[in-house]
Length: 215
Image (cartoon, rainbow, N blue to C red):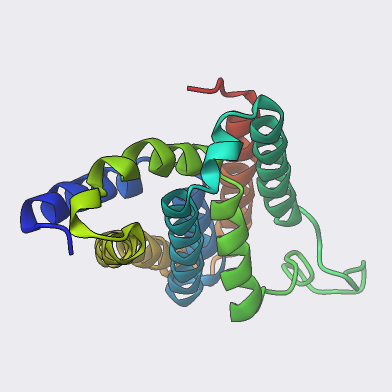
């Protein structure tokens, strides 16, 4: 098991990674704005699962191939960007079956995604974030000490630390977005503004990811 000092430093770095604006945070916020705090919390769980996959892959050395392959980096980057844009554009589309005979405000939003879909989308959003992969690849080896034995148990401990730090932060984002959504609920023009804001967040993040330079 890593020493306490190592765990504390890793915990601080994990907190900095989590609070840095990125695809996962914007996805959680968008789900909270669009469907409430519960959906935001589920999406936070999905993002955590995706982050743990990155961490384990980096610990196993699988990410090395990705890090040194510009083509693979670009492929994952643009897939992630397109996926975020796709999720965002869905908020601008009317629900199936909307038509002139419906009352005001009806048929203006697509059916809400269920918890399973929200969770899986959270995983995909985080898995398709190449910068998270590169972060763990360059960062994690500094906390693995060969003198302490096999790397896998150390990676699992650090994964638990990452989960304990990142999940509360993401949940705060989820409940904050849920509180805003509750204020907007029941007001037609604010509800429309809410959907446009949610979709714009995701589309804008997708464009930022696609156009950003590799660092």
